[in-house]
Image 1 (cartoon, protein in one colour):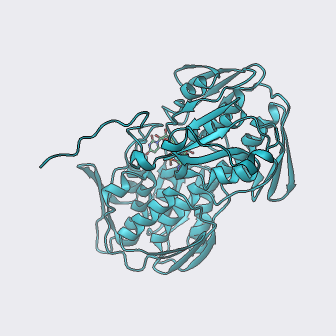
Image 2: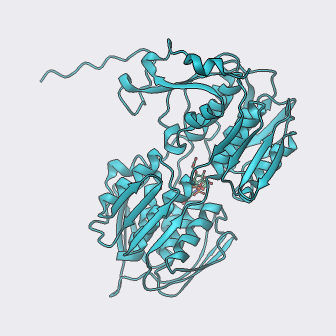
Length: 462
Ligand code: EPZ
């Protein structure tokens, strides 16, 4: 049979998820100021794990403030694939996991969404067995799961990996996990969440030491407690879970996304614009706010859930080291680096959480930044201005960082792949347009001739 000849389209990314013909790009006209208030969506990294947590419950679960993201849709598909009933109505998800028909998530879905690995803990706790394909690595690192596996073994599960799939089951007549004392070599967010969920239905008490303290861990714990779980210490490095027999229905609102909020604080700073954000939980942004203040921006908490940024005309330099919460969040590293490229002086950024999370440096340098990398350390020498350029982001937060750099750059920046961005930000370009940013989402084939609609251009504030 005659095969279809595949010819490389000009400038096509061979990695684009969709065919070249409908690949979309963002075209950004830099140098415009922003104003107004932006709505922050529910937290991606809470919603994903809480969705997995609904597998613990045989009754109806209603989740509110769920962001509309590619990753959320992916997790919904994975839940549906194992038999969960799931209905979306705007930012509300109605989920019923009474009848779990299968305990194996399909490889083609799992391979695209690392967070799908979160179903292993709840399936083991609920049914006593689970088969979950190993999540692959991604652009930022190998992302192993041995802390999850070792913890589940400590809780009494037999776990082995065969042909890329993790096979786990609980021996014994009632197939019930048994509480245990677990020490995590590293305060892994995912491992803490997997083990906390598994322990909610285990027989006896589980103690997780050196646990992650991220707000998303606390949100998951609050969600489980709202279903009747007994969890204490979430948000500290020691979490104690007393197992119960069964959980019940819940109607639960997801916390606001602190990384999206941090992204918009940087947007205001890099565009030298005063903007406000709501809803926000300021305590979730302590490290980011401290660093913004250190370089000369003012952060005003206008109400318990409203934050305003008043940027400096030119920000100073500062040093950043990414750490587990409450340290500076790794997810904000690329974004803050974009801002520091325009600071007065040299900044040193050390990425300690992931082994390969400085790949946005090359793209920022193409926009005129002056950044040198040695191992996991980047030295950012401030420049007076960035210049717009076509760029190709490598991961989710790098994509957002390049969008923000484009807001400040002279001329036009084209973000040539949006597959990462759409996984983690809900309509980022729409929210920025509402603040006055000049950018358009267009088909790659139309980008060269795309122009701002006149009405947008006329009201542009230079
Ligand atoms: C969560 O990933 C987030 N993802 C990440 O957000 C975030 O960057 C990360 O936590 C750190 O805050 C979700 O919540 C869906 P880890 P996770 O386990 O759980 C190593 C984004 O942009 N490790 O705390 O995978 C691991 O390799 C994403 O929204 C092991 O070695 O993070 C990494 O170097 C990116 N063995 C470090 O720990 C393990 O078994 C931190 O990983 C598990 C992790």
